[in-house]
Length: 109
Length: 115
Image (cartoon, rainbow over all chains, first blue to last red; front, top):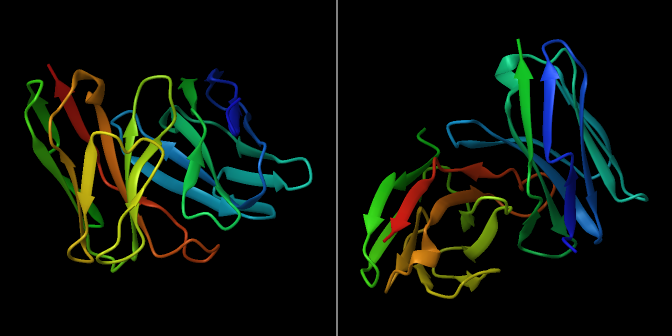
């Protein structure tokens, strides 16, 4: 079983919908990352969090350490949000990140 | 600032050929990483470095070697390429592993095909 599981694998939405992408992990962590991979391939960091909630524009990331679960929400989704969203965790004391397989989001106009 | 750059962007090799991928960062970051990305799999760590002159093995190091002679550069070498090494390779850097330094900066990727 992978240490980081994302759901769903694929998600199609209509413009304007509220989107939720989930990430569950099975190890103790010091931080969780959300990354976005554009259709052209580039990867950018969206959030890094160890507790609570962070917000940037229409994106919100939450984490529940006790339940080993994080969610990425997109409000008022737009076609430009179409991308692969990747969850990664840093195990406590580790120099390495462990990545989920990603969630491919398609937002139709 | 250019951030993280990778050279080349595309390459086609024949089985048994060798090549070196170059990653350069201009953010004075200590940590640098080489990942490969394959369809249906998450990013997998090949090798990483925690500072100039250091290297360490990641999850899938076989068939690859690395060097970090200068802080800003991290080289990934394939001594004898195999079709199983066909992949997209990403370099990344960060300033550390704490909550305040762990933001990951990725290069644009190198698409490698081994025939």
